[in-house]
Length: 459
Picture 1 (cartoon, rainbow, N blue to C red):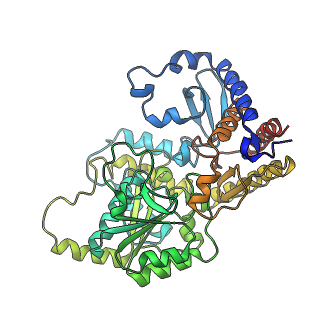
Picture 2 (spheres, one colour; picture 1 turned 30 degrees about the vertical axis):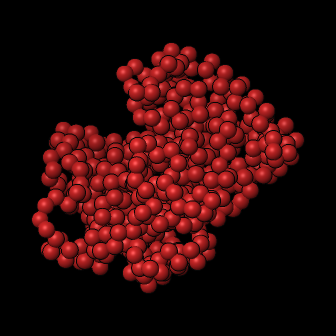
Picture 3 (tube, rainbow, N blue to C red; picture 1 turned 120 degrees about the horizontal axis):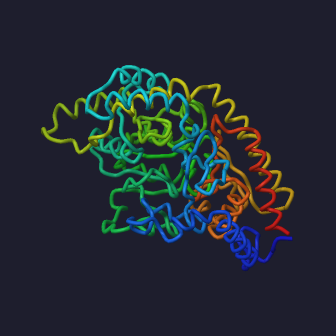
């Protein structure tokens, strides 16, 4: 049985058992990847920290997997190991690796120029597609969701004349500075671990717990908040779903306070073709979507309401001339236009989402069945095609609970053990995505692998 001594256990599993699993699975991982270990075991030459981007070292595997190719919902490494991919670039390849319509669009555009600071004919189609899909009338293209969030927040401050923004504890909005705040023992502070940050970010950012309507009302009462930036569901640690009525209260209170509302759908686009916003009838002033909008090509979109657009146009007519501080040279390039159009028209379809949701429900039920079978104090959370197992009882209600539920040592051991059984999930949390390319057999293999690992831990 799993340990019941909480002082010696993580997620109901003894520390000794976790360490033993991590050691044996780490050895199995190395044995299966001699070529990869020879090439990357001591780091990739020429890169600081041995990797092109520092978070590649944050995977729990002994060294990063060196990918040879990825297609559909599978990755193959240079040693020939094939992995069913449920990480999918942590949402960047949510619709599968190189969806055929996107690959065709890339090939077609590659011979016509990759960037020229001017629109292409694909741009003529994208504007109406975004209006129809997500409901807001005015749109802009950026390269990352971080950029899009930054630009939208600048507009919010411009039109309201207010400095502060409000975020939810535990939120994820890329690397937007103002969102890098947390509640520690109920006190707003800079998020721990920020590199080179010398400012007190809480001077211009308020932070409260998700699902706390009373705290939201109190934070907005001084009418000094330009914008609330919110994920519809907290997603980047342990998933926290919105309480019934929370989003209605959020919209009502922001309107009463003259505060704008930005909904960041970068992760919750898993909900459906129009995101969480359309499925649940949210009415944001700004809408942001990054990562998967171009099928894996770096791109993001951000939209604004009629009212905000009108106020921003008025602001632009009266502000002093000069650079707005918004925009990057490579944003709104023709490769983005081509791939966004292909993704919206041919990949993010209702039929694909129906399939994704069906398999996600199967995965949810299968993982829950394993947890129940071994009487583990864990639970499963889901938003559309996005599923997470959480090594703590649930459901969770806010970011503080999500932080406490996070079990890095245990999760790392599980992740490596799953890789050794042919399954890849997201490294920084326990997120699994179902893509249109994911098969029922892959879902069954994931459930079976999870069951095998759970049996080892609970034996």
